[in-house]
Length: 327
Image 1: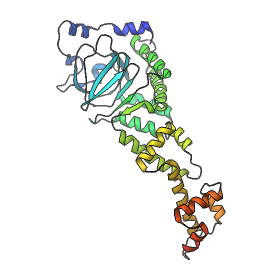
Image 2: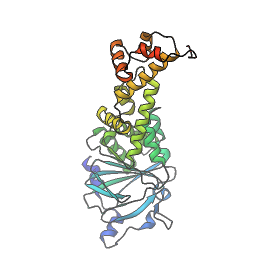
Image 3: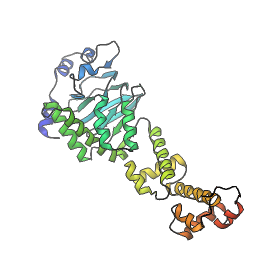
Image 4: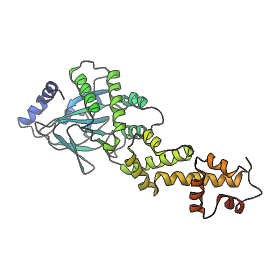
């Protein structure tokens, strides 16, 4: 981050000065008008704005609170420790923490050199990012759905992307725009966040989530659906590209959640479809082999015999029925 911008963010605020002068706790009236400590977007965002930023208040324990907007915490320098659902989540320099609406969390005291930015964002701000991610992007669907929940379930997304320079540069541009008021336009900032979002989709291997099982189950179901629909031409490489996941990570998730690797799942689907065609059509075996996606007839015969302990032709004869449907 540019030194001039970092120096600007280091300036002790009026609130922080009062804390240093002896005020022992956070002034809740600055954040909410209600009895419950729910940080209110009406207090934090100017009318008509979908996003605002402020430096995180240092030198004091920020007590358990919620907020009626999406919060994104970015650490410019040092680190910040959140307590979410009784768990310590440490955000270090260059990392991002996305908190959905009404997530209850508290923040341990930050020191003078711990500089963090709070992005306060209304859910509709992400509409542009979601559109930029494209249709049928299941990871984008998952992330946006997590962010838009308005239940106190404690979901968060922690991205350890300090080494992803594109994200760091975009965040710096966005912080500069919002802090200085130069180029402070919703559309520009929404598009910048959309670019950040796209890079985060490419960097999901660096993410930690509050509900990892939910995410992994979604990936497994998406894999099974992909194989079901595209078994003739399906490849693990293509699925990795669609899900924005590295091959080793996706392979591990598939095996963990289905008990089979991608090749085994694809083979089971192709063989099941081949059996269906053998029993319900008069297609030659060679045509069936091609129809289910195998280019090598010898390989098909070998894997078929390994599974059914007989040849395709013998299987067809043994399972032939007069009432079969002829296509």
